Length: 126
Image 1 (cartoon, one colour):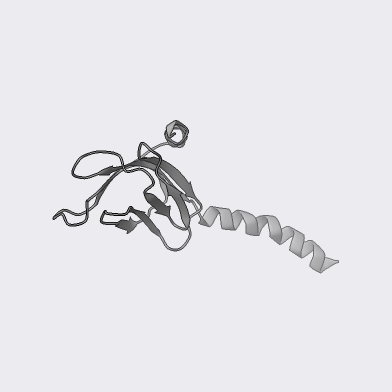
Image 2 (cartoon, rainbow, N blue to C red):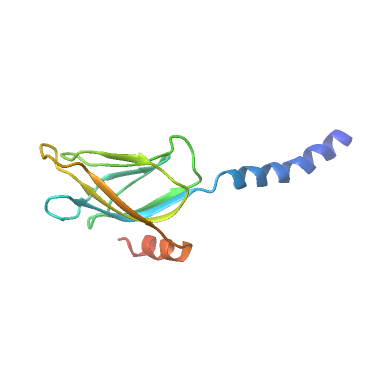
């Protein structure tokens, strides 16, 4: 009887501890060609173990609780992949993938945003 009460008392606390340790990461943005500025449709976008594809206009939104690997990555056939360390929080990003065979590297610009801004960006991506 005491053991049963102990398990019940621990379960809610344990759940809160796990949620508190994993703040998560959320990213919304666009993938474009660094040379032409044109959107790159169907680019593979990864955050932790979550994966999505960019839309026909190059936009994407994804995220959730953080997990290994702590990386954000974007790749597409014919382009140099981009992989950077992921940070918890919500971010709006612009990914510029460099075509293979060019001198430049793929680049990322980002800015931290509010939950409401992230929700708006994720809803507006077709």
